Length: 108
Image (cartoon, rainbow, N blue to C red; front, side):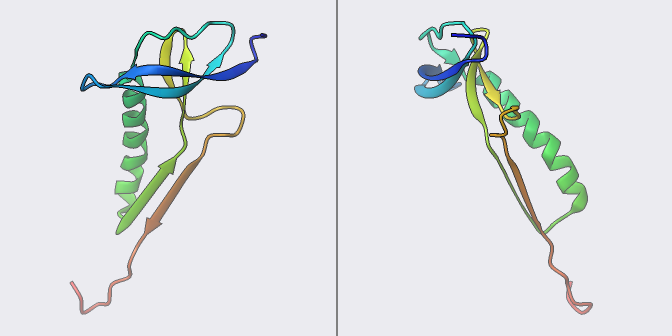
């Protein structure tokens, strides 16, 4: 396998509440995926960071309604579970929908 090869494996992931679930992850490079439970916190931290970066400009725009969708893959890098949101292969996506309603002058 070369460094650019990748394949999917299923690994156990321990959630903050102690529960263990299995996730399909992408393995890149030559490192073998070990099957010891991985911690989900790095993925949760990545999601939180993305949400904070998106929420700030949306709050400034003040829409009546906002919907944000983004794609994410899980990968094993250096033995750690990692969220892969932006990837050169073009699999990543980000969809933002904002809605405003025009109010009539007589309404509050």
